[in-house]
Length: 449
Image 1: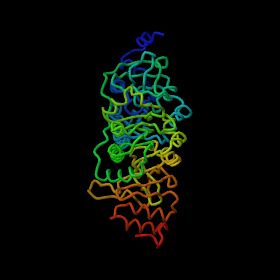
Image 2: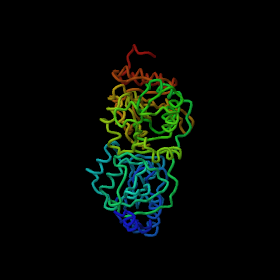
Image 3: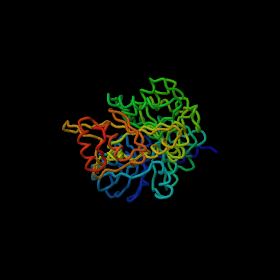
Image 4: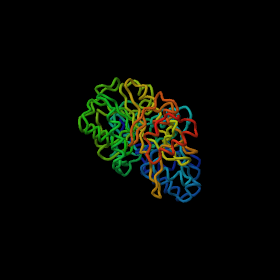
């Protein structure tokens, strides 16, 4: 079949393509760096010119730039941004009343689309250019994209020549036969998410964790200073034959691979492949994953599946937390009623890593956070701030790590847990935490002070 002929038939401008959007529609922008640019700009322009175009629901996640449709006049009255996982940009949209979070277990997202959402009016997102077989690669965001496209009445792809092509074989592409319209954008640079500088606290936490990682381990790292510090330390370590099976692929993996420490030879599945469901980082990462046969992009219902994760020996999961209480409950999505990010795959990997033969799950955080007035607030609290959401329950947490140490909470009763958690709290808060533990009847007179 001559796919070039089909391509020309479906090729249109962003301005023409967005005319399919109607008041009351659900418009899906996909995931992270796949969010559209030219189409978003054209739709925002149309909405500015046509005040009757209202009540449009957008769906996306981990926005690395502010969608232009959220910047129109009276945006809070005319649109709603629905986020699967809030970035700092989306957090501000939520604060303004424009955005709302969609609670999820990330591994279930494709099923949410196919069995629960069931219908989308328009899907528009960035892809890599069409290949000779008629496929548009989803680039570095396989995630839920295939399922999203399956239930969309209209699918508009915005081709970006800068989008890396990530191989895999698990719902990482869409065929031209399933595309309604094609738009050739302005080929902007792919949105970047630098890991940021690591602090002394990050490096201290990293040392505790790296000491627990064996040769041949399979790694899952989140985003942020601490996972990045772990990656940097691994790159400088003597560890070898490491594997990668991670929700999010970050710059740290590129650094570890550059030192020859990632081979994947010990993996029981996807041997020799670095597996992920989406990626975000710097240009260094995008250059590395592009058409790299060692890389495997796959849908999130495969990558984050507890059964898949647990089948990989020596699986090491490292995730962050906003708060941890004295019962061992982990809040990673909110601080009280204020939304921060999202559940993502934390629970999936906490469960899967512990079920893995030789696997270990780490929840890490700094012991304190500095408030706007310069005072310190403990992240380890008697109980989760009222209104806060528990991401990983007390029965799931294994290792808790702060700059003051690492404790294993598996098998510990409530008084043992309280003692262990307080032992890694900031010294300035320990006596107060002990007092609160006593009030909650989870502190024994024989506990260490």
